[in-house]
Image 1 (cartoon, one colour):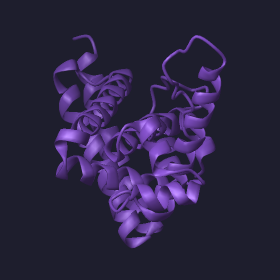
Image 2 (cartoon, helix red, strand yellow):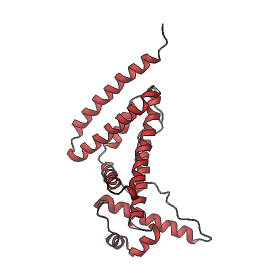
Image 3 (cartoon, one colour):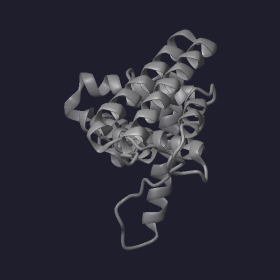
Image 4 (cartoon, helix red, strand yellow):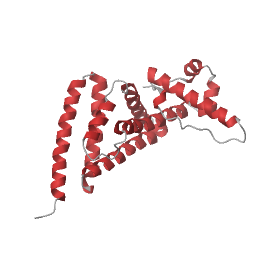
Length: 219
């Protein structure tokens, strides 16, 4: 994973002349550099002075663009929140809304790809920041969970899940996905975790059979 995978929609407030473009470009480069730094070193121990030296700017320049260390980390969190959904969209490709469990297989394959795991690790580190400092980072953490649950509800509805069961199954899928990712980061045991995924898909297919039966017209 590189910063090319991350969203580039961070823009500065508009200014009356060409300085706004230079400001936005410089800010985007600093954010990209900060993301590369935390991918390599983690976010929990981030310090502005070493980061500024690595990026070739002064700490004051970082403060000018992001306001504070917490503001910079919040931008990184936002980038990875958007990134997590972008990875899912990329896994779906042109088959968005595919009403089969093949879509879930594609998500699993993408999210357990070794090339993506550094970003996954950082997403979980950002979760811990949200737990420890909800005042600064809690909103981003909550929004990440809300985004995923909304996405999974839409997918489950396409599979035929009844509306009164959407929250239950979306929560179960989200917990299973995140648990498998944590397990993989801790153990590196791709084969075992893939086996667990196959079992979970079989359980979902069994549930889907029940959903279809309940929707069938009475004879």
